[in-house]
Length: 138
Length: 456
Image (cartoon, rainbow over all chains, first blue to last red; front, side):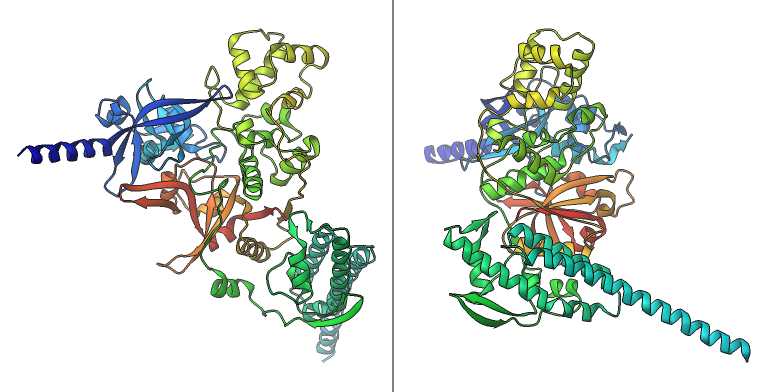
């Protein structure tokens, strides 16, 4: 019995770790590299695509993932100047950030996220995926 | 009767005139080629740079005559000239070896010599110049003859599709599918492309921002809303000319856009210029933080001292002296090779692209985005863009030959799928992630290509 409970606990903790996990993140700020401890959560979609979001967004507590979708005009969205995802992030009221995080294999992976509050962020590719059909270029 | 006789005479006259015109255009093209050929083969030695010039002249000759009946004869007439070139190059290589020089602009001369003298088989730069000729080669003071088999005929594209659409992805520790760059909201695709070309060659990540600053018109650039764009090879050559070194990404990060106001680099420069022009530049914490991020070695006093004398003239160029924390690859020299329309036709550009990929190298690609997209979608991308071609594959579903384009928009690719591209994904047990690279069919590349840039 005790063994079964322990096994369940191990399994439970493993599955929790698989969703949200502590990581080291790296950003460049004012010419300096800043390494911080943070938490990333995996958000897996039906088509197996995997995106990273903050803990608050994973728990459904962040506003951007609850915001009703409607047509949005993004300035110069179709121009090739600049990353389209950054433009969308800013238009939605977020702040884009390029960052790296240390993977479980020990390597650094670079990606981009959009902050909507100090602790609320979603990966920019998820944002584009969610909003792409509503974007109109100005 | 008189009228038909006149008609026949008139047609004969016109035919004779046009035949004459064709003959003249062929003769003119050949004469021009002969002139260039002589100017190169009469030199004491033939450098890699000379070979590039020769190749350019040869390509031009082909383009000018390819639709003419004289095409075959024209190419035939270049054989002895190209044989002379080969002899001269072999002589040059022997001279290099005497001086213990075994590399020229990154080219392995020992290998080139072995191929030219028939000791080894393999691909060398400017191979086309040395094919389909019978040439003497000078070896240990003796003349030897080598016969090179006739090159494959006719449709190059078909040959490539049938034989050469082999799967390849060229990556190393500095440029790989894991580390796509992100140009944020600036129009520096050319600088990111240039940085990737150098990074791949040197196996160290080179700063894209540093290369942007090597362009001569920063002031013009920041005065426009979206930036004026730039030139892949110019950003490399100008930087090397000015600094005789390169700047590593770690010594000047391109992803540092977190200024006080979260403004990007161009916005910061623009506001800096405006402050100087309006005489409102103040020693604030915000300014110093921004300066530190953009030009680590400069501060308010540096800017003040310069602008007092010169105003905003060449301010960014001056400040760029304070930018890179450390010089790397001091003395490194490379002259990127540019091949653009209309001088080179699309077939030639695609063929070159394949050759470079086959050598394990990567290629800078300049293209027109809307032509690549082929989408009627309202949000399709528009305008000129630059990116890097790092791979090739045959699509198993439709048989298309596709190229892997490394964009500089970060990992994000979802919007591109909507406009008909295939986003490259890396999948494992936990799921799939975008790599920020796109698979684009050969047809789309051909529709949109403007030119290529690569390192020799």
